[in-house]
Image (cartoon, rainbow, N blue to C red; front, side):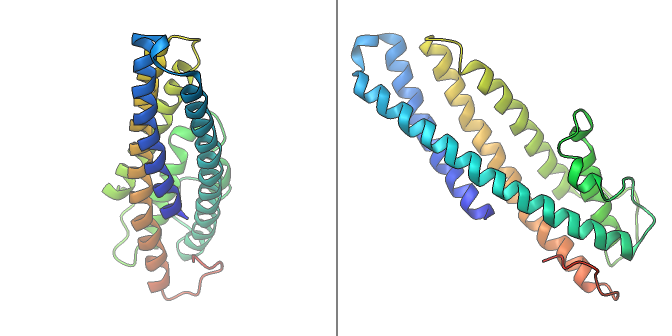
Length: 202
């Protein structure tokens, strides 16, 4: 599923480049672009936006459910060492303000308490730091792009917002790429532990 989301992200990025060029032409001379070209670009952009949002939500739900399962397993494997109750594995993503740090805390604690080696409470794996940094930057930039993209018929502003959308797609791709080894490593950690998990991490 993450592979599908990443592939779709590449398609969105390529379309954003093409749309930005069209908007630049409109900004220079509105008569240089046929309305049919603009209408088609709007249709493609809107369709890709809906599809990407749907795939992203499915991936996000799958990831949150996986995190819930491994969090419950980690609580059983090592009850100590967790900064948050298992409910935060689900609700930490949607509660304002704390959503900036609680999901990262949960993933770090699951990694540390599931690790088959010596337990270190303050271990901050670079994989998790990189994944969370890319995800936060993408989310913040996406909010800015959404705000700037709907400011009327200022084609120059819309072209700039569209190009910024390419960076959003790139950052989400990085986050997805880093999420894969995190999922694989934590799942492998829990499989290596002696105790049988309460919930399957797979």
